[in-house]
Length: 421
Ligand code: NAD
Image (cartoon, rainbow, N blue to C red; front, side):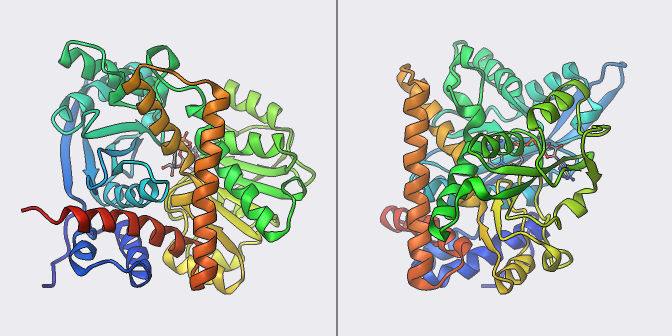
């Protein structure tokens, strides 16, 4: 039966659905499971009233979408951004499902956020947004139901406020309600670095398969936050050269390599790359077209599209962000022989160490850095190898192979459980 366009039917959700449909014929999924998994299970929209520091009030729309609870509790980030919408959360929640399943984590996907401009809010205002958002979502989140984590413009502090608000309502400390929180309240060592370091692990593995050495690569990184910043530093740490990075204010470029420690000090002091004097400035659009070997996309969705994909001058693209490449851009890049390491694989280090954090919290037993890094390496390599082999065996793009890997796991579980009632 045909379904009218639904409330979450936005271009980003359509991207997620198109990718799903491209993967389905290769995933051997029964028809009932295939139909079920096209839809998020639950979408919650609330409004968050917040008193601003000047005494006036703002009311922000906010969301939490859960795509699938077949494999376990749902898991996904909370973002604060002016573009947060139901469709964006729905698309991101679906990608989280495939990502968790591909990494063989006992989770389904979720995503949420508040539509606000965090750069216009003070820390105290962000705290009030966070506490009220958490209170509004009390009935749908929980350590066995849905476990939030940081995403765009949210961080350890945001997770600490969420954990505290949830715990105050329960009457006892519940560290396992969120991941990505400070170590002092049950956060995991290495969670902060996990996504960015995971991106570099995947890039390195791809280089090995392609017969390249990571240390010979010239890299460009879009986004200098929790994912892009860490990835850029780790690339340099592993011997590669980072020739350009960017943030919301634009990019900086030095063809013989940036001094990243110096760039980082500038950003820490001034809040952005704007005004950095030791390198050339480029716009974000120009940055995506720089000549390089590896282009890491670690900022936003929909950065490479039909309009600019034919001007990309990289050999390998690593998706640290979720959904940075449109379906049209994927086709253009494939035709041009540019390999794309897909988001559901490449940025999965974050949710993997989030899973380790949750397990440690539930067991009240904490692991050390070496153990966590080693376990992350094993998980990422195992997923990478499965995706790479499937892509070769069935002549699929790495994205389709990664989605097939994830979809098969969820669909097998759904078929075994059956669709209730
Ligand atoms: P963040 O807020 O820490 O960093 C985002 C970065 O992008 C900032 O440097 C910001 O200035 C920059 N940016 C914003 N607009 C930009 C623009 N127009 N052009 C260039 N740069 C711009 O967020 P993050 O956690 O690093 O998330 C980045 C992406 O990675 C998102 O797509 C997120 O969903 C994804 N992701 C994050 C994690 C995680 O663990 N944090 C895990 C998986 C995926």
